[in-house]
Each structure stands twice: as structure tokens, then as C-alpha cells.
Image 1 (tube, rainbow, N blue to C red):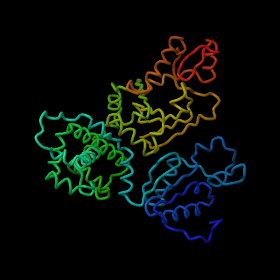
Image 2: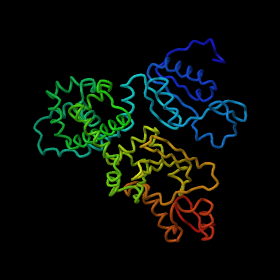
Image 3: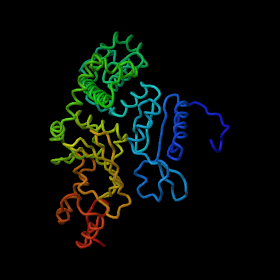
Image 4: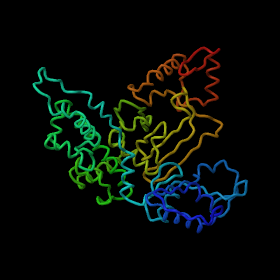
Length: 430
């Protein structure tokens, strides 16, 4: 509006209103800018602002509903809850958190639901699932239907494993061809049983049903989603995996009720083959999110409504008895032996609040120890990390409680012992 006031505004599928609302000092003009951007968006409006956690070390003085910076420019910092409420009350549409200070607002409900469903959908390695092939018979008098049309059948098999069910016409490019060759789609599955273990399809079906249940719980955490507003693909999933919408809705509400019970959460945490399990918390690396049982996946996914991008955190902490979820972000988790804590985000599921703690500017730097305890023994880095922990225990360096020594104290401990860490090895200091 200032540099190019006469330039026509063109509608687009996606409109990005990035760091605009936070610099408009007049609330009426701010709301007008938001509404104008919403009008121009055909499918999606992306809104980004400065989050309140970025204001703690700023040099400013209060002005209207924001502040004036040292350069005499206006800035308004938002909390997650404030921004979400502002967007939804102004636009009359549900907004989806994707990160601190960043929200998506979809024009169409089917696009919104498809996006939410995609966030909880696990990747299925169809080649790994298909690895167990049926043994070929000793004598093959003539080529089977599978052998004659191997490419077509493998493509159909891939589609079945990806969906966890037999695809509909709109979901499989060669639908008519596979019907013509096999006679019917169920018959095509039977023919594939000559080559592949059909238990793989059952496993894919179970995984996809769990993903759909987690999505449905997440979508219903705030409000009920009518069946007619779901994208066609999700409607097919519901019918193919659960039979009907009522059955899925009943299962989802049951899981949500169980997820609100502290005893159920604690029971779900116990016995998992990965992560760090304590009396009050269960902590694990975010790469193990897909391996959580359904109840805990739902618990974490409900937190993603308050803060999108949970998988970007390094360590996720489930508070067993308080309905909270904490996300810890470290400086180079994989490469540093003891990475520094940079950011902690606490999500209060019961009150739907977000608390942000920035550690990047604090004098006392908190380090992470015993990294392997947040993984499972199946992880490729587990042995490397655990070997360092064992060295530190043998050198009597890990005789501490709580979170362990801060960075400065840890350096003193190593120096007094005449030791240093190179990579993930404890060695004599040079």
C-alpha cells in the first residue's frame, strides 16, 4: 500500500501475509489488511507474526497495544492463543498452528481436513512390507496372470499397501485394466497372494486405520467435523477401514476420553522399548513419534493443535499426570555429544495454552546427557551414544542428579579429570 499503491491485487491459491500484522499500529487497519488478504486467497491464507517469546530481550517502550522499538518502529508480539483467537474471530474460519507465530487458514474444509490428516499419516515402505515373497512352486506349467502382467499387479499392490485397502477408481490409474486382467479387484488381491505375503496388506490396513483414528481424534479435539466436509479420499478411508462414520466417531471419542485419564497415559508409557520412562515423565526423541501406541499418538497430536511442527523438536516430554506436553529443541542433537538446550515449549492441553522458554541467551547453558536413553536400542546411533555414557560413568563423571551440570561446570569437571570429548569419545586431554 505504500510503495505500490496502484498495483492491482490479484487473487491466488495461496496468499502469504508474512510479518505484516505485527507492524500495523492501527488495529482497524490491521484487521482490514487481514480481511483483504483473506478475500484474495482462493484456498489458503498463511499468516506469520512475531511471537511474544521474541520480545523478552528487545529494547522497547509500550505503545498502544504493542511497543515502539529503539528505531521508533511499531511492533506487536502475539502469543499463540491470542493470534489464533484473533484470526478465527476476524475471519470466521478455523486456523491451524504450524509453528510459533505461524498459522494456516484454509478456505475449504476438505483441504483443511486433508492437511490435518497428512500430518499424522505415517510413511509406509511398501517394498519392505513386500519383502516376504511366497515361495515359487517347483514346476510352473504355464505363465500365471501375475507373471504375464507383473508391472500392472505390482502397481496395484503398491496402491493397496499405500492406502491400506483396495483403491477406488479415482485412486488407481489402471483401475479398468486390473479389473479386466484379474476379473475383479478382490481376485487381483488373491492373485497377488501367489507372489506376496498378504499379511503385509493386513499390517498396512492396521497402520492406516490407526493413522485415521489419530487424525479423527485430533480433528475432533476442538470441534466435530461433519462427514460431508471431509475430502473424498478420507471418506473412502472411513468406509474402507471402519465401515461407516459412526463407528469411527465412537472409537475416536473413546480414545479421547482415555487420553484424558492420567492412569491410562502412565500405563501406555510403561514397557515401551524406547525412551526415558520416569515416575512423572516419559521422554523420547521425536523420530519415535510414529512408534508410539495410539493413545500416546493422540495425546501428542492434540498438542500439535496448539503448536504445529511437534516433529521438529528433538526431545518430547509427556507429563503423565498433568495433561501437559513439553518440546525441547537442542543445538545439533545428533552431532554434539552433549547438545545445548535452546528452546523449550510447554503445551497445556487442558487449558490450551502455550508457554515458551528461550534458553539461547541465558548465561547458564543446560546440556543434555545420556542421549541414548531417549532412543531405542534399534537406532543406528544407539551404540555410539551409549558407549560415551559408559565411558563417562566409568570415569565417575555422571554422578549427578536432576539435569546434570551446566556447560561451565561440565567443562571444569572434565578439566579437573584431565579429560575431553572428541566427537562421541571420551579421551585424555591434550
